[in-house]
Length: 580
Image (cartoon, rainbow, N blue to C red; front, side):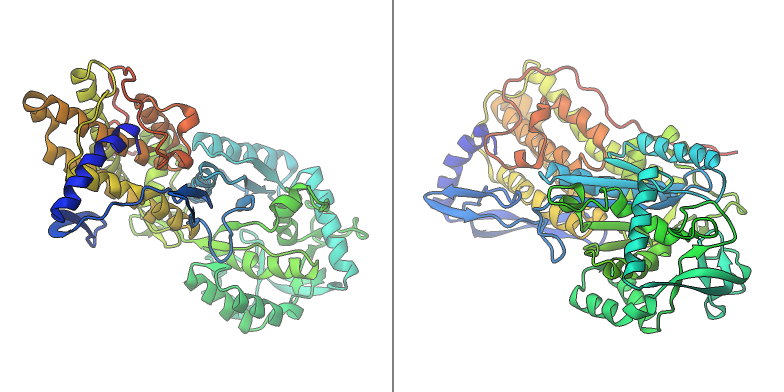
């Protein structure tokens, strides 16, 4: 809390305790996520101002209090370096909204961890296609460009065509072979080029793969196999012992059901083409089948097989979080942990499978001509607007329906009308009525001031708790609700009227609102990084004071008396683009 606010709070608290019974705001959520309030008389107790920031200890009147870390879960202690990965993107075409969705979600979580003080490695992976290297190079560039366009702050962009990856995955193959889990046999079955997967007759739906992809019959072909069947019981035991290792819960149930249905040994090489990583000892005739090759990129990116103390592998593995689409969950929650168990390597702590997007109720496909190009979205509506909509329109993990009309409505309401308009109103009043500088003095706080400030004290804990379970929509909704409360507060306090009747009270109200904006905007940085940065600039918050450690620390606040410039709008109103 600001030193100004701390000083202002003291006298009022004494008055409230003496009076003993005052009207205090109680906050209630409605079904649509907004907050309503009602009043009732209760005893007012001095609130705690301690931060819930990562495992800090502070002295409070001679008593040391250990503060609970809201990022800690059953699969993450909230302290060790944090590795988060996107799926392995298959570069057979230009990126689509699914790639943008997953990458943005991973980036939001990674940025949140960074601002929480966590050492973080975020990987974005692009899987080679079955076309020549030149094609893979060209399309891979599109994926790199998308990351830059969406302001994705990944540490590594991994390609499974990299030489270091090839050497790593060949070593991984040798380890599995030496342990007796790989053997040569023959295979025939239905094969999906798009999914890079073989399917049984019983798995086909109307002659297609479960994903809707076309399949073709592969005649008897020599292949190397991984003994997946040997890990059925081990996997089930692992799922039982680690119930949070697969999320959401509905996906976990699907995986368990699949494994209980019986596991067949897995074909892990192909002899019918040459594009791929050669199988060690059989380089002329076999290349590795895509999933053992692709999945190993998660450890090749960390320098595997170098697992010595102090190596990147030692620091960051096992990965804290794999984020994948639901269509490739089985590969990450069944095949991948089985490979790792066979190699005596720890398995990832958590795999989270998100849903698919439809467009206005229809499945997205090239044949329907309704593919959503994320580049066009960003060019038309803006990068932060696109990120915001993708992260808030649907609960992460569920399927979502895309509509440009809904996007425009949501962005205009939550960003332009609520957050942006509040910033503009407050900063404009400060500029015009406080000598073009932040308020220098804050008078005694009224109950309404304290209630709004206290409401923001729990924001970081709520946000971190949501992020720890990948509930990104819940996290952002807390920020939206806080801005809703702040807008209600400014309408009730009416500083434009106080300007004439009580200028000192006006300054106090404006300073309270500035502090709320500071905290909310710091927490908004993972979602709308560019816009949040511009708001914090206008609030005169130094770049060195924008982490979550600065949220509730009494030493940091909006700088009293700091000169400001004429505020500029952050979020222009959007209109639905006309499409040919």
